[in-house]
Image 1: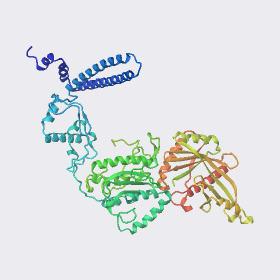
Image 2 (image 1 turned 120 degrees about the vertical axis):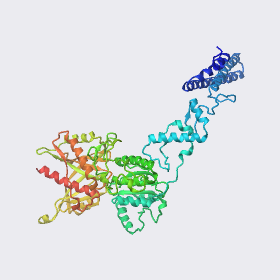
Image 3 (image 1 turned 180 degrees about the horizontal axis):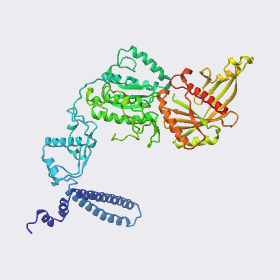
Image 4 (image 1 turned 180 degrees about the vertical axis):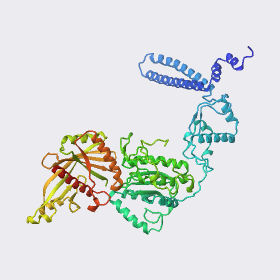
Length: 424
Length: 216
């Protein structure tokens, strides 16, 4: 009998420690459940105390009025008794919570591991419980070790969920953390978001020049930030033709290869919007952020006849076909940005070129041009052009899966929204 | 402006068009989720030259058509089909014609019916009736594809639509079918970019077709 372990012996002598020993022998989920229950109890007791206080005040108020019997006195006495009981219960619950580590008190020495549950991480995630060994490992290790462990765990996760991302030394991490589990949040320091400055291999004029060569039917215009808004408002079906005619004249005279839609000379580092126009087919607007860089920010498609101040890279066309197309393009943009922000603009423009055939190329799956889209019950042409395999990761052309020779947009497959599935 | 194809109903040999067919066609539009939007009406007028000397009649074009379109309330269109001329004028020209008395209007026809929206397509199904009677002379349908204005670029889309449309209508086993005649717009001096003048020319062509089919 003397061989009994310390905890049960201690529990026999101290009744109020009995419960705490029981709880430490239980698994953390049960602890959490008990703690939640006790918190609930505490909340109820606090509510009772409040009510009691209200009643006392009421009784005092009644007593203050003249011509009263002993009734208020009875009320006060009764209420006092119940209040006292409530407060005692509350104290008991509080003690229980302290012992299980939910509440911290000055006398608490229970949790010597240095981590108190529940732990709220800097990014807001809550760690409700942790196994002792995990705590030991984390608490015992130095900050450097912990960081290394966390980085390793993160890299493993990333490799598992995002296999298409390349482990380049330039560590592009923006926008891909969604797959990482919350378990690592408590140890993830800001070291993981460090991003090396990407080397500017391409400037905006170079990118546009390259795209121009590939798509002779597409007109490219560049604009300063506010100039595009002015132009958009001026667009309307009657002035559209006039602009195209006059811009042809301007292009012959301009020595600057960048076709500037802005009024007056504009240097490349102020360009905030790029307009791609395939006459009679579509007009695409891409905004760059920051201005002058080659980082696309947003993209939208419109009919070439549309005009108005809603024509901008975050606007939506009034026509269904272009609205659906814009949604698809936004996904493509995010994909290209996720791969490599340096080549994202080129990839996006190159991909947009394939939409020259928007109204002429039939769906590769069903062979038709127009079909009733099941989801929206609209008649739509094939607006999907796959983007997952049509990108370059390096600035040079050699890695592209489409060689420079077959830049013809007729070779890019097209699908209806309903005909396209991710496996294709 | 968005381009438009004008289809007309070609009844089978020996049959005539009637209002039953019109209601069936309207039901077809609704069956492909066309949302009824409102009414539409265009007017076509035949003009004959007024000549003192009847022997000169041969020198003047006999088929001068005047058209007023719903979407262009301030304009009036003249078409001389034999000469391949189309002219866009202000709507006050009708008043001037009245005053001049050089050409008198002989027969007027209404193209009227309901307008439907089908996503990016706008359809107008209409009957052809003379101004002062209820005799149904024909059925026409305007198919407009709103996002584009180029006849060339839209050709495949429109053909596909007409195919889908013909399929839908043929399920009802009606005595006839819709036809589309593509006028040679270049002969009229019109470009690939669609305008109301193109519409006027299409109406003139359809009118000639309706007359021919009535004669047969």
